Amino acid sequence: MKGPQLLILGAGGLGGWVLELAARDMRFHWIVLADVNEEYGEKKVLNARTGAAYHGRYPRIDFEQIDLLKEQQTAETINRLQPEVIINCTTLLSWWVTKQVPPETLEKLEKVGFGPWLPMHLALTRRLMKAVKQADYRGSVINGSFPDAVNPVLGKLDLAPLCGLGNFDLLYPAIKLEVGRRLGINGANVDVIMVMHHFHTSFFRKHAEGPPPYYLKINVGGEDISSKWNRNQLLYEASKNRLEGAEINPQVASSALQIVQAILENSGKLIHVPGPGGLPGGYPTLIFRDKAEISLPGELSLAGAVKMNEEAGKRDGIEKIEEDGRVVFTEQAAETMKDNLGYDCPVLDPDEDFERARELIGLFKKIAR
Ligand SMILES: NC(=O)c1ccc[n+]([C@@H]2O[C@H](COP(=O)([O-])OP(=O)(O)OC[C@H]3O[C@@H](n4cnc5c(N)ncnc54)[C@H](O)[C@@H]3O)[C@@H](O)[C@H]2O)c1
Image (tube, rainbow, N blue to C red; front, side, top):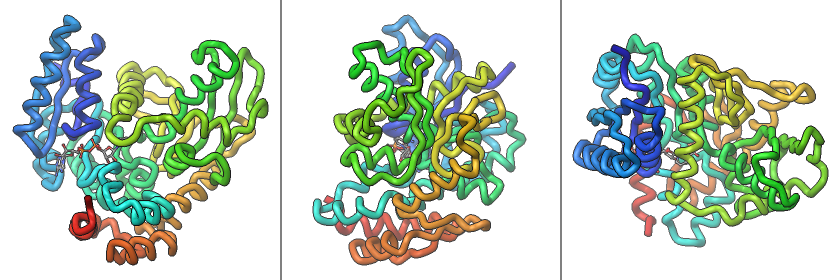
């Protein structure tokens, strides 16, 4: 008998929503939720089962306790389950929690980007991918945990997952809807192709002018209308009213499940995914069962697209990722983290990600509100 279609790692805000939506979706008949926190995870499973029942859905949903810090145990569980798709929604500290600092500190931290918080997201994902490699696993892994930066680090270590989810993909429906609103047509009739980075997603929530380079093409009825409006302004208008914090999770979970579907159906569907094959930032990508094929418009080379995303990565605090996976933070990001949190880490060695994460959590807790 085949294994479950989906193993969701992480029963928190995002993983919980992925489970709730998958449980109600008739295409899923067997889902496994896994987390280090067994009591909470079991309750999340019960919650999803009972919610789905209102929709006449009674899929099999199991819970497994997995501690991603224990690679051998993780490898054994993955081997035993052989899920078709694994989706990683774990972290040591979620992105929105890092915003719970005094406003004057937050302002300074936000100016240097999200990059310095990388160890929170890398530590568990790197161990997961090591376990996946160790296991005789034949499915695909999607990483939700800061994929724009985590996936390229893992790529350098030969541990890249298939792709990421969310982030710039959150702008995809937002642009379609905004263009539809402006033209008085249904957003479904708007075609959008873009190359962007996690940084753009947070940038356009608050600003219109001065973004790092990106690619955006908009077509309606076969006509290229990309230059019809100021594109920065369009992205700002499409983003500014988005909800903050954990409230975005239903949308992120939908972004995740469209990728899961494309993998299960081996459909080659074009999806905007961050970190495909270990690349930095996000690209339009054809998703198959076991491969993610970047699909760029003819006028844009892969090297050009990667360069664009590397530039945007700098605004997110990441100067470069070395060939051995070490992450060099921008001088400004490293100094701001040191001055405001006492966290001194100009370069992150992936082998020290967990220790660095623990150190940063300790320092963060001293000023957290
Ligand atoms: N790509 C996107 O668009 C997007 C959007 C939202 C969240 N995220 C990311 O998804 C991840 C999860 O976010 P969240 O808000 O759900 O976080 P959360 O804190 O709500 O949940 C994280 C879960 O990880 C579990 N966990 C911690 N240590 C573990 C371990 N050793 N083994 C197994 N499980 C462990 C926790 O118990 C918790 O249930 C984060 O990296 C977050 O930044 C990405």
